[in-house]
Image (cartoon, rainbow, N blue to C red; front, side, top):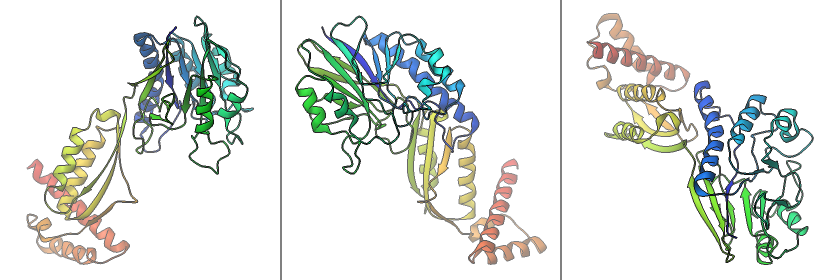
Length: 381
């Protein structure tokens, strides 16, 4: 009998991001809960018989009771059996969130925590089993996939889904690295039929069998993720083949871009790029700004960013790569028509601003405020 199931991972419920305001953080957190319900809808739409979550269900074992209760409420809406694996963020140690009263007392009956590597028969699906490779500590000392497979024997007519978490042989210095060759041997001899991995937040196939995949996080979590925001629909067919289909779940995005503001067109390019991003309230932006600009151009830049920050979830500058110098020029003051003391004060500030150090920076800041105020007064007319 052909069987379909959903493979997800790295929910990291309770995750926080320092660059988000309290309002945006609340929406970011809720999106991760909403992803659980989205997976439930996908299960119903695709005919998936169960859902496996390959580790890091929670951000830590110390998330709030509110986060746990909201997660359990969302899990209650999923119409198929759900199998949760403890990962490196939420290992099954003495302080495990999965053993806390809030979780244990509220866990829906169709939700199973994979606390060992014993095969779990899937209700209503004869010959289909789920096997876990749970983390019991944040620093395991062996390949947990190999350990789980070592206790299995091929059983005619039985297909097993092994749910695991960790790096797939990326570092040979890591004793817990998952050996791809060993996993492929377990697939070849029939001990397992599919290896559902978590830890890498981008959807990624591993090896050559087409049966080892990282599902990726259901919502993006950082700028360097290449393909986050997905779940996988896996079909193990009657003829022994395996088909994997990527399904979109993510509603947030992280966007990063560099702009050279020297010369004409730099600000227009920045503004056009920001305008094209959507949805703004679920987009987190990191900008790298380089070049030398006048006070007037910098004032326009600050005005653009001030406006856009009210629309986006967050806009931050990548300080390590940003190299934006602000230098006053004659055009900045051409329309001010200052005389007397005011003109002398501006001349003094311009002289100071041409130097270096804290005093020069303070003078440039003062001139920038003056230019912005003058521009605002002109706009009010």
